[in-house]
Length: 442
Image (cartoon, rainbow, N blue to C red; front, top):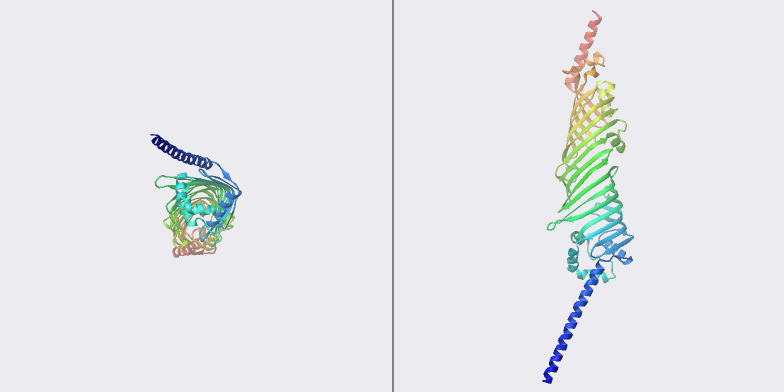
């Protein structure tokens, strides 16, 4: 009986000891778990974290980068202050930026799955002193790490993209960027950029708000009412990224200053002035100049043309030096953009002196081939000498009409009258002279 009691006591003691150890492990796990949760909500910063972020950026493609301070909250996200970075985007584009603050928020569940998947690599990287080998390559960064990010907020001074082939620059000045990811089964990234100035070479948009959305291999871009050429511009585009191509692109301009346009181009300043409205739609095509297709309309209002090469050629052809300084109420141009950057246009102008219709191609390099049907208004004809007015064909409203061809280039145009206009000019002048002689001998 005594032996049985001793055995039971030993069993109870062993059981109690096992329960105690198990409880200790559970409590230890709970303590560690609680500490992990607690530390996960704490913000960590310091030189070591700064160096780790800088090294990661360089390993994943940045040529150079520096930052002032990093604040890392494991369960919430990352914030970087005063980040300078320069890196190649692809074989053509290179980017430089100065970001005052960069905040990144991510989905902790997705991040934990990623950490578990790459736990071995992450642990080795954390304890390794060898920073020459990237823990993740650029492809993994883009395809697997970036999708973990839920929200991005950035405020900065400048982002500059440079085309290394052409040397052209695209610049965003004084910007605020916000992005978010939405959708459970098919997540999509969207956001908007508010910028003081968007620059492309000599051209710039001011106070622009650009909305964008990434979906698969495409991106939609919408530029709201931005200041441009003292007027306003809107843009709505759907762009394929791989390969780069236009799916849809609509551009609209309202009350654009023609004077400002000439000043930026440093061409025809003082020769043309007025206000213009623009609309243009591009068709589905690769983003290659010779492959672009589209159509649009340009309407100029309250236009004054003065001593343009085309006007000088017209004055030399039919006389009337008054045509070297010609006002128009409106000039409307409907055009289509065809391959090899050829614009086929129908231009209609109306003013107190001259009405005209001009049709034919105009090339981006300045070459043109236009057929012009012109009409001098009755009010203008009444100011002309009889021998001149009689040398032109009359219109039903007692104006005078002519036909001519213009060819060569916009800067050095050539003009020739149509056969009908030449015959009428000769016969009209002959009849006028004959009438004058008859008046003398009456």
